[in-house]
Image 1: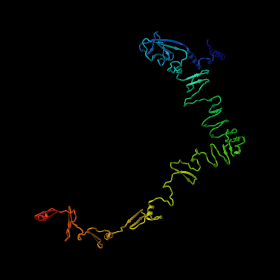
Image 2 (image 1 turned 120 degrees about the horizontal axis):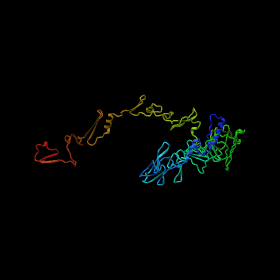
Image 3 (image 1 turned 120 degrees about the vertical axis):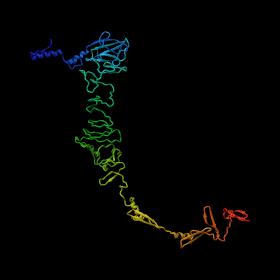
Image 4 (image 1 turned 90 degrees about the vertical axis):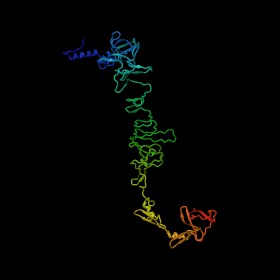
Length: 518
């Protein structure tokens, strides 16, 4: 009978009944199902494993695709998603590729199956519906209703849409994925080969170790060596080995640091650094250097030697010698260079004696250069003063014969005026006095008193003829009284005509005729 407690039972009765009930029911951890949240979940998982099998057989008509309702034996089609096997003419069809399911009911069952390709008249379509076991995937996919599918290339893939949990020896089994995780491995996992993380993604773990070295919480321990092009950060612990490269930063010395020479005949062995906390500070005194661990500085009164290597930090004092390379230093870092403003193109450095530094300034032009005492700037005023003779450097222009200079300093003008040196009298005296000579048949008569020079032909002396009348196309020659005309040239010709008597109209005869009357 049921173990109950009535209203008249004592606390002891209740305790006894409860213990009996707990013993009869048992502890929930003893369930062999993965659903151990409560008794209801466990019982539902058992119900899901109960098995039922039903076959529906249909004879297809021409090009029939949808199958629903009663089959050949009067059984009405009903099935659960992912709980059917479908055959056509004995060949297994694949969900999603060869058929789809529709007509879902309120209880989650389906009542219609649709082929992707219409069947042939007389084809047998068998639908095997079952329940029980685990309901596999809910996301669906090209692989049908099984949890995993193997491809022709022998690869296996899953079909669920939420993710995968692979339990190793977890008890109870983990059934809930962590937030943001798609594939979750529960239990110790070994990878026998390389593990590659795609570009742009991160490999995260609280601790990463190879059994010797460990990285935990950003701290590395157990490393036998570190190889890096550039290492930025703090190193805590003892270092046994060589350091190749520059070291920049502070060093807290817990013990001494000893430099050991390599097998090089010319190598210098550096002295031991000693922690100041032990009561001894500094480097070996024979080097002339003193190291103060509290400030991290090296000091010395003087060092005479060649230093090879890099120095990171300030050097106070004078350095005498040649630096091998100052390529990493800019002029702007020098103490006597004022670099408070960025220089511009074309500027030069000029010394500022008041501030005792060099600074970038614009290059000088004729507008900014101070004028000297001997080479003076060009100005119109200075040129005119020089040309007019009013400057202190002498006269540029000197007036000559018949030339006068007039300089107006206020108006900045210099006027040059020329005066005539010869008049009409001078010209006539020159021409009449031999400057002009008469030729054949030409006479010159100069009257100095009246300032006239007459030029005429000398006909009276028989030396020539002169034209007294000139008209278009003809000339009239006048021969003086008592004078004749002598034609003694071969190129003189006369046209003549012999007549019996003088023509009555001699005066109207044509020109050029000579009349002879016989």
